[in-house]
Amino acid sequence: MFTGIVEELGTVASRDGMKLRIAATTVTEGAAIGDSIAVNGCCLTVVVLGEGWWEADVTDESYARTNLGDLRPGDPVNLERPVRVEDRLGGHIVQGHVDAVGEVVEPAPDLRIRMPQDLLRYVVAKGSVAVDGISLTVVEPTDDGFTVAVIPHTAAVTTLGSAGPGHRVNLEVDIMAKHVERLLAAHLAAPAADDPSAPAALSGPGGPT
Image 1 (tube, rainbow, N blue to C red):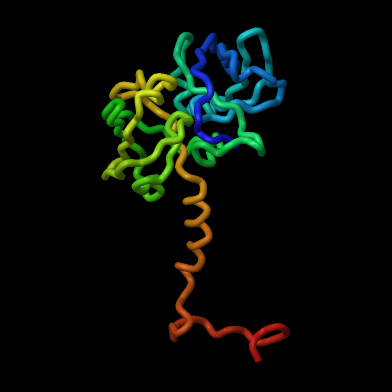
Image 2: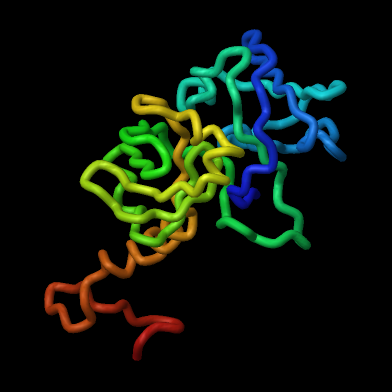
């Protein structure tokens, strides 16, 4: 579980098949084999640790469904370690499970992102969304995505500062919105109690008498 508050701007050191090596110092402090680190919002598992770098195994599925497949040596990446129980939740609950890849239409500071139509229902004004693992507040939903006002600090310490039009970004919508939708779906689909077409309740042990 993550918060979407980027701890470090790392660099892709190498990419060899499944092996993705990231140059970093902050997120490797106290890290161990098997720990999770979010790279551009994708939760990856540490499989090798070195001095100033770490490696993860990335499957073809992950490469295909995220922007990790676009990465080349020298590219910057947003890094975050998992949240601890005693940490402040400075952003919002981020799982590190990318929902889709979006596209930058207008760069920061007036960032505009295009996203798949099936995710638009989860985006609301002043709601939260993770873009490349960065917790951001939606300014305004649009017909094909949303806008965000990026402060100078965020642009300086994350990849958003260099993301121009056409740049692909990993998107994770608010998990709470998806849970609410799931919980309400059965109630919204159920017929009203006074609906004459609704099937009669069955009587029996524990049932109506």
